[in-house]
Length: 469
Image (tube, rainbow, N blue to C red; front, side):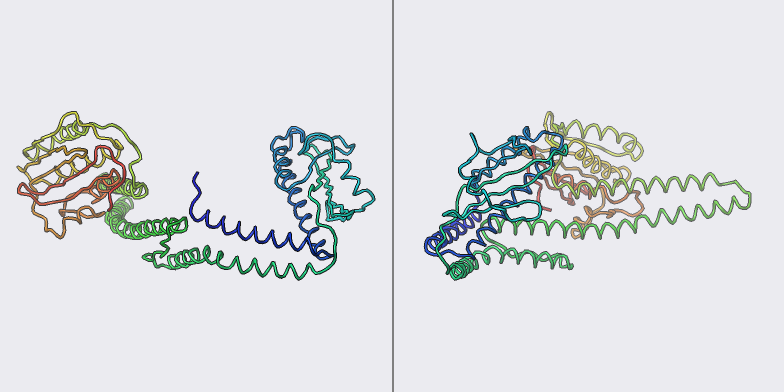
C-alpha cells in the first residue's frame, strides 16, 4: 500500500526530530552523567519492563488452557521484543526449567553475574535489578501465573548498557533537549491539529442544528479526504433528517383519515351492540377492515420508500428482459382496458437485456403502468414506447390525462402527491419509482405531450453510479 502524503510528512518530520534528539542525547551522555540521568534511565527501563509484563500476561490469559511453551503468539512477541528493544527474554518454571526464550542457545551467564548480590527494587509485583559495574545494566524478574495456576517467572535482561558514569550537569542538558523538541513539535502539531479543530467545530455546529454547515478543509491529503468525507456525510444526514421530518408530517396526515373513519365505524358498531341491534354490524366491520387494509398498504409503501432512501445504489445486478416485463404488466391491465374502453399501444424492443435489481425495477415499472391506467379517463388511450441509444434505454409511458401545469410536473414525484383528487392511492408510487431509477443511475421526468401526460425514463444498461437527485 502506497503511503499517503500526510503520513510521509509526519514520518519525515518526527524522524528529523528523533535524529536531532538522539544526537543531542548521545553527545550529552558522552560528556555528562549523574544521578538524574541514572534515575531517568532506570524509569525508562522500568516502563519497558512494565510494558513487557502487561503484554505477556495478556497473551497468557488469552489462551489459558494452552501450555505456555506452546503459545506461538507469545513466542513471536518475545522474539520481536528482543529485536526491537534489545533484551534477552525467557520464561521459566520455579525450578529454572526454560519454557520459552527470545534467543537461541544458552543464557548470558556472564552478564547475569553482574547482578549477583543486588537486592533489586520492588515495583509491586515485579523486581528490577541494576548493576553499576563500569556501565549501567538492568535485569527484571516478573512472577507470572499460567492458565492452569502454575507459577512461572519472566526474565528480561537488557542487552544495551547505559553510558559510563562521569559526573553531574545532565539535568541542564535535559532542559535544553526539552526546549529543542518543544520548538520542533509546535509547527508539526499545528499542521495536524488545525484542520482537525476545524472539523470538530463543524461537527459541533451541525450537532447544534445548523444542518447546512460544511467544513472548509480543502487540503490535498488525508485530512482533506477526511473533510470531504465529513461534508458528504453531513449532506446525507441533512437530506435524511429533512426527509424524515417531511415524511413524518405526511404520514401523520395520511393516517388521520382512515383512523378517523375507523373510529366512527367503531362507535356506530358499539352503539348498535349496546342496543342489541346487530343489523348493519357487518357493514361497519367491513368498513373497518377496508380501512385497516388501506393503512397496511400505506405502511408497506412507506417502508419501501425508507429502504430506498437508505440504499442509494442498486443492491442487485440481475439480467432483466424489460420488454417481457412490460408486456406481462400490460396483459394484467386487460380488465381495466375493457371496463374503460381504452386504446392501448405498445412499441417495445425485443431481446434487450438490462442489468439491475429485479425486485425494485419490477416495482418501479409496475407503478408507472398502474398509474397510467388508473388515471386515464374512459375511452382514453395508453401508449408504451421503448428506445435504445448506445448504452442507454429510454421508456415512455403516455396516457390521455389532462394537461398538468409546468410548475407542478416535478411535484408528481414528491411523496403523498396526487395528480387527481378522488382517485384511490397513497401518493407514494412515483416517489418510490424515482428513487429506484436514480439508484440504477438513471433519470425520470414527467412531461406534457400532444397525446397527454407522459412519464419518461432513461436507464443505463449497466448501472454504476446513481444520478444526482
